[in-house]
Length: 77
Image (cartoon, rainbow, N blue to C red; front, side, top):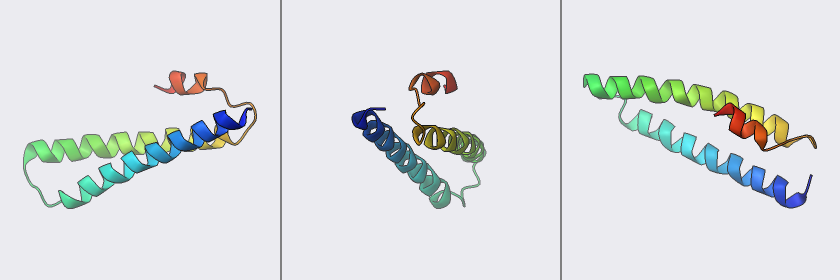
């Protein structure tokens, strides 16, 4: 695999981790909200973060192999 592709994959993984960290921070700072809408939003974000962690782990594992193909990313969406 080309070095530029590996660097691009690593950047994408770092960017995804940053977005996930921001979402987790949002959940922490709004955790004491008792509004029904906020509670539903927390549940939705938590579920999507759990899914994103699984997908990110998969991408990280695949990016470490020479067989990594960006078409995997499209199929995960």
